[in-house]
Image (cartoon, rainbow, N blue to C red; front, side):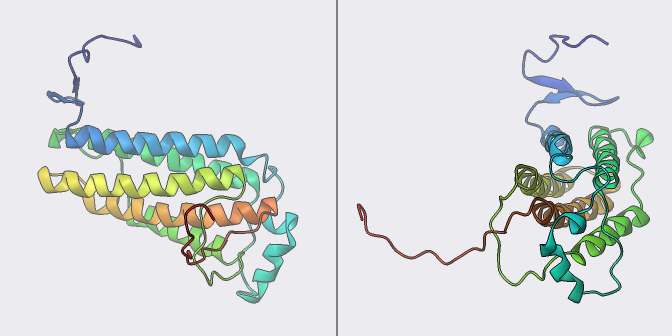
Length: 220
């Protein structure tokens, strides 16, 4: 497969088994942001082992997570780094399939992403599993902490943008499996927030609580 074709030099691109459209077409915007999200998650996965080794979970590396045991004494075991990496790879595959679906206008060729209610339920189970390992969230927190957690916070905002783009696209054209795609992206954003917190616990990095700004005079 040739890397460059020069066919897009005039500002258009071809949809899968479809016509050429402008590169700012709602379909291109939607699957472009999904691709961006996939890349951000790849960056997070590349640094994950620096925070959580393949055989260590957050709770085994930080006493902070132990404080969360009072939340749920029967909480499931915390996943180690290898399990998290494999999960992220499965999410990247989901996103690749979603992008392919969004790039396909021909109804005959729909059915590429194969999202199911069960897959969404799996994301919800991951949210519950990880949240049970964390201290109760009683205040708004600011994005940041370890580099991996910061990337995951970035990922959740890109995920929300992808969700908005897909909703916008659905107002203009028929999007196959739109409801499941939107729900999936919504849950994934919530999950990335929880994983970012989990990673900070693993790194022993305290969360930064949002405080109401106070007015400061210029030059003071």
